[in-house]
Image 1 (cartoon, rainbow, N blue to C red):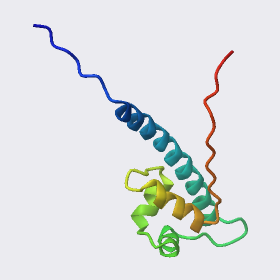
Image 2 (image 1 turned 180 degrees about the vertical axis):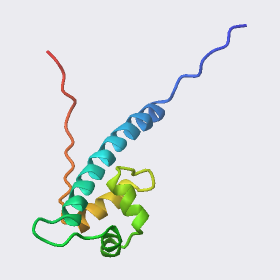
Image 3 (image 1 turned 90 degrees about the vertical axis):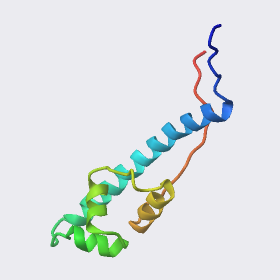
Length: 103
């Protein structure tokens, strides 16, 4: 008797696609946050700001600041990254469009 493969449901397909989209958005947010933190750490013509000071400003631990600077977002929800970006004075915009198709 042949073994039948179970078809994935539409919700499963959406979830895996949503996960890759979520990962891409998280990566973009992490990059923007890391850039802003680097600017804050080494402002031109001013005294550098330590990771500990940045952590205090954002209500995070120094190790979490280090993770953000390194692009590691696995411990952050998308919502939390958006909150951090907003705290840093960044504007987060989401754009939803139809997929581009070749004609």
